[in-house]
Amino acid sequence: MKLTATEKLFVVSNYILLSLMTVIIILPFWYVITVSVTPYHIFSAKNGMVLFPTSFSLEYYKYLLEKGSLIYQSYGNTLKNTVGGVILALILTSGAAYALAEKKLPGRRILILFFVFTMLFRGGMIPTYITIKQLGLLNTSYVLILVMAFSAFYMIIMKTFFEGIPESLKESAAIDGASEFRILWQIVLPLSMPVLASIGLMYLVVYWNDFFNAMLYVTDWNKAPVQLVLRTIIASSSLPPELLEAAGTTPPPTIGIQMSAIVIVALPMLIIYPFVQKYFDQGMMVGSVKG
Image (cartoon, rainbow, N blue to C red; front, top):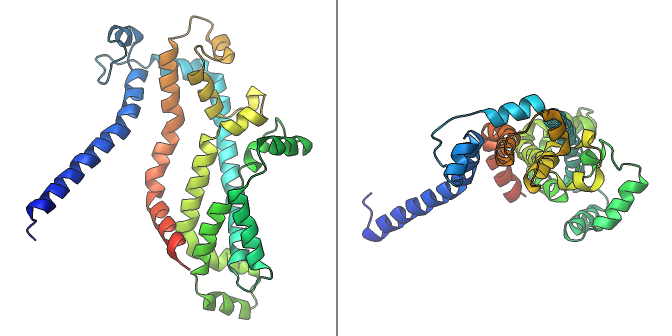
């Protein structure tokens, strides 16, 4: 089909705009990668403008991976918190969503309003801190898992998806003697892989990127997640004491350590996301419009 002059102008404008947006998004991360592999004397000579490195060095990565035992330990903490948190969050979210998707549930409307209320109004930082302290969860490995283990927003998306599953499937299973738990486990969840993958990805990103809760509830560096270590490296003008003590000699310049730490921390999400993106798109669309 032949395009008119106005349509051609619109298409060209879209391509230009999207290309500019792509450059704006990619350029900062490309700069981070470039600085992380550029020797400091070249970085300093070019006043930090090193979009294309003329020399290649893995000095900063070598320093972090050989001397930064804190990085390894915090990475392990983050992996443990993320895996445990995503599993627990999906269990709680799917359980609540399945119950509220049942129209025969007594008090269903009131319960839904209760969950929606928590999306609009929160107890606040200080009451939450006091509650966690009273429960004895301060400075423990469990607090970073439990504090983000449920989202009413994600639960409503999953509930909407569950409501689109034909009632006849669940009724047939119930006639055959299946319990509600078995219906959820063997019928509803296998049919809900797109929304489970998308919600799981969102929980994964939340757990992986969390550092604020660690700042509030964790003071022991042995329990600190990698994002808190990264935040300390970036926010401070010098390296954390643990990294300085591990060096034994004069450490590399801080700017290189900061950039290489960003790459190390962001790399897992960049690897995982392409494999689950199709589930993310499908699950969000279906879970948002069905019902």
